[in-house]
Amino acid sequence: MTNDLPPIELVVVPCLSDNYAFLVHNNQTEQTALVDAPEALPVRRVLQARGWALTDILITHHHDDHIGALADLRAGARVIGAARDAHRLPAIDVNVADGDMIEICGVKTHVMEVPGHTLGHVAYHMPDAGLVFTGDSLMALGCGRLFEGTAAQMWDSLQKLRALPADSTVCSGHEYTESNARFALSLDPDNAALISRYKRITAARAANRPTVPSALDDEIRTNPFLRADDPGMKVALTMTDSPDVDVFAEIRARKDRF
Ligand code: ZN
Ligand code: FE
Image 1 (cartoon, rainbow, N blue to C red):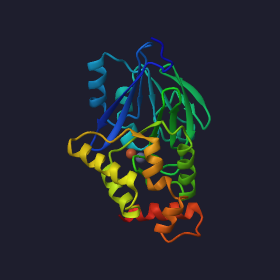
Image 2: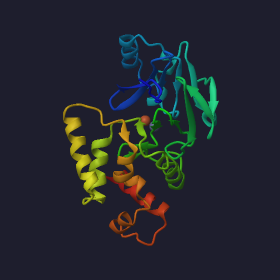
Image 3: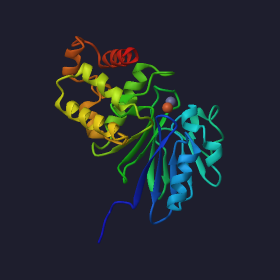
Image 4: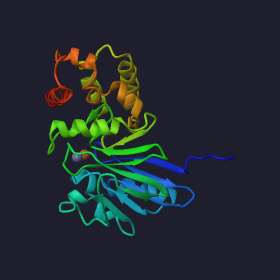
């Protein structure tokens, strides 16, 4: 049997109250990467059960709920983080910036700077594995709050992520999807793809299943934050003549009040 896909396995690790960390494992090389380090115990449980050891830890941004367990988990692993945030991240072994390519678990990994939630936020894209790790930038049916960046920066970041191959799997940092879905429906009540996604989300949550990761093509069709340039969205917001970035800012502001 031949298969061009790399032998990569993805494990979603629920942490804290609503965070997700991710383990990426290459079954041939036995390398294992962790994306973000919210909490040690749940990560360790998976590593022990699988017999895996961490070779790399990728950090998306400096917030405590993404790095809090780094000191606990990092032994023996190479830690990768944004050069831009080196001053406020724990010690980083490999400082990365937009456009950098690093090899993680035997697959090439592109670094994308995606400011907005924080100024030093990065995403990691593994094109050959079809995975993108977005932290608190693009989230399932949402995007991170604008704690540091501007609406223009976040809109630009989201457009870069939206331009990735539509069959990419979006691995984001939190389980906020059900409330994001209610907000999305408030703007977009007639979107058939959103209505059917909402049903899948409520069923998953009722069964205590994660709604993350999500499919980029679903995000493109249903995530209001990716649709600030959609004529129908502009009509719904009575902003038909407004620049896309102003529409994005209005959607973000409404979500903050929702
Ligand atoms: Zn954050
Ligand atoms: Fe977070």
